[in-house]
View 1 (cartoon, rainbow, N blue to C red):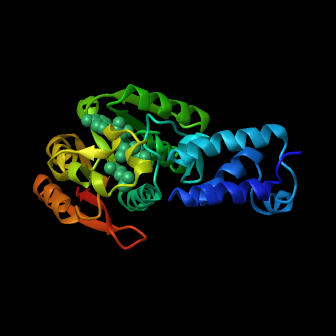
View 2: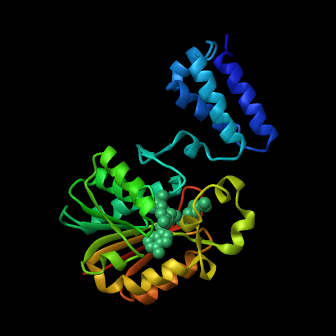
View 3: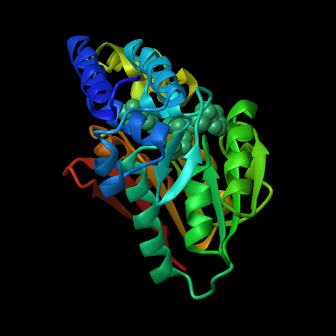
Length: 284
Ligand code: SAM
Ligand code: GLN
């Protein structure tokens, strides 16, 4: 006889807590293993796990106890209501980035009088931004890029699984899209300064790809390069939206104000009240 669901869950949560890890991940894992959530999950809490479920739960709890993020352990994360497969080649998409997509769509609806807008997602990772935009705005013609072929493979898989038609291009920042004009360019580039590594959680630092996290020049390298390369390829009107680190608002605002002297530049806070996005709206 295996443990009851709640017994495994409580034991795993305690082990995680003892190691200074997030105990709630045990519940996410249990929901994944049993494929049950909400009331169905509660109803079954006092039932024994099958041998198979018990083994799978404890094998994967071993990975959690090594500090692996639960999203990599179960191979998925939800973003903008869609299930994205993730592995250690891509950043786990974050809730802050859902806000970037939401704010970008809201602004685009006001700016563009046609629906077939051309949208680029630079540094697409799992495909989160590009795919979610396309699902919300099916007429948009979406291109997504990344420097990493391994990331692009994950993004392509997610686009296909979610039925989003997207063109994928490999290359350095705007290089692969320089031959065309764009209505909307979105990016969540790496923006963590190298000397911030010591304050980061081990689950992030030891498991997420560093090419997705860190940037030179105090984390500003990619914004500097985008501000320099984007002006000639933006349509009029156009919208640029980038996610930023919460201390980078002033610096990134300035970079885009210099690159687009006639644009309206806005620093937008996330739901935690931290500077998190810069939008640059170029006028007709
Ligand atoms: N867009 C995804 C998201 O929001 O979840 C991933 C964002 S992650 C912070 C940054 C992404 O930029 C990574 O996928 C990384 O591979 C990619 N990247 C890093 N350097 C790049 C470069 N020079 N050109 C294009 N993409 C790059
Ligand atoms: N928000 C991510 C983190 O704090 C960083 C993402 C990025 O660098 N674009 O881990």
